[in-house]
Image 1: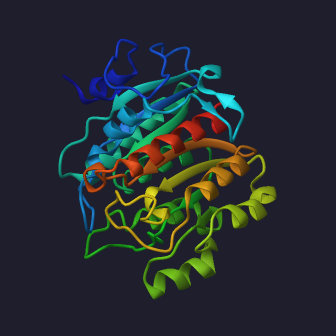
Image 2 (image 1 turned 90 degrees about the horizontal axis):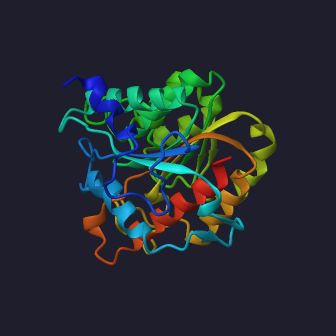
Length: 295
């Protein structure tokens, strides 16, 4: 069975596995497609993010379909949950390549990609596909960590290098970083000099840059560890001093005015949080992203 067939198999409407609440089974009718990237091959502390996509879907069944933040209901939009991309265990470079090929195929269908991670390196495959589709792509990076290393312990393919790869590909002047509160001294200095860098906060600095992002194609990559671990402990590299849920939902309201052409949420590690609060928060963010960005 060919690799290309495996990549496209989840597009078929008869896929009937665990799906995000409210998903249609009609791929052709959908305006957005949810896909999972179950990978944690390069995590640097606690593993388990490859289980994130499945559990985010499962706990979504406890959500209301109506968002009072956006005054919109999931029944008003059409989206298809394509399941998880089959990724080769332990091979980060090939896994990222498969994600790139998969999301490139999604863009050819004209649908909005909504990715579930998985460690943050998976976003490089999706963002690379978006940058090829939209040459003027700008990236909003929401995270506790800078992710600006050229390599991590000698490995260029690492979740600590993902945003540096993005900067190298599209230019650091097109990267906007929010909520950052962890990284090396060198990474912080480089970010202050090269990217649009707003550490520690999200909603208010984001609001101030909306005019310069207006009508530009935007990819949003969101690491769950931007939240304080009091809110979201289920992640591999938790960092205290983070944001809380109301600020996140306010930020999504602000981004509703932007031309968002891709979104992913990464680094949810369900086994670390037996209370399920991290997974529940992640599924609510996906609901808000679907309602905010699906036209």
